[in-house]
Length: 332
Image 1 (cartoon, rainbow, N blue to C red):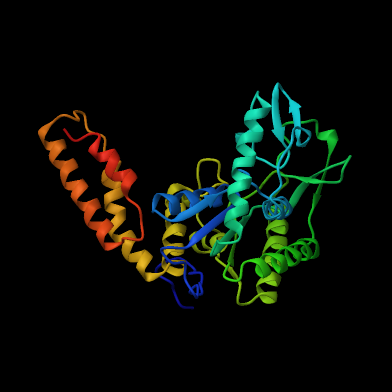
Image 2 (image 1 turned 90 degrees about the vertical axis):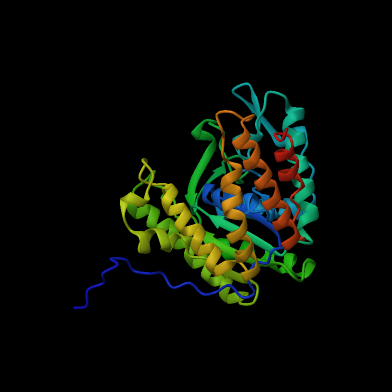
């Protein structure tokens, strides 16, 4: 028997072709893992609309969100529920909830309006599914994104089938691809384990998601792709030191490793060159001195400003005005 000194089983990842370019317009939807990846893309100057409905976990809720954005739906008061002295949308995360329904509607419709206009021009739709389990209203038989702590008697909890997911997304993609000839889809399955039932049920749920994504990839081989975030954590890292204290979410180290693999296999070489230049600058911008008026810190800011101006000339497609203005506010 051969001994593997690295004590890991590397996950083979196909190079994304074409890779995501520096000027790509993206939309990310899905679980809190999608939220992490989206925030990394945003802080690295990529053009991203991140979770316009807030964090969502199941494929059908994400499907409905995409359909509503394509339809340019406008939410009305009748689309909200009032519970625990707040207004909620059953399609949206609790971040959208508020005591004032006008605030809720404004937030929802602003994101919907932006999403509608982006759908026709995005290059990449990146979707992360978290679970095949859904909550469906008993009265309307409608899958919701969030129950907002309404009585459990109002919902039926069930597991989606592979066929149900694939059928819904085939209809969506046929429509989307006919309207946007350049958009491509990158699927991931969240590596976060949903252990409400037990480990076995979580695996069954993830298996449904993986099989559905594989079928969609086979149906649209030129348009639909897959990034194995789930496999990297579960099979390659495979150690509880790569989990957070709750033993279900990936640790900061694991998130960084998965991000590094995403950069290597999914982002264009030009993007990677930019990240090599930008990452140390971004780290320096997070520096917080004890004395902002000190001579050493003022020199540090001047040098940092010069670096940003230099990188802006090297990558003129990106806008660094926000960072430049922020540094100038501290320079005396």
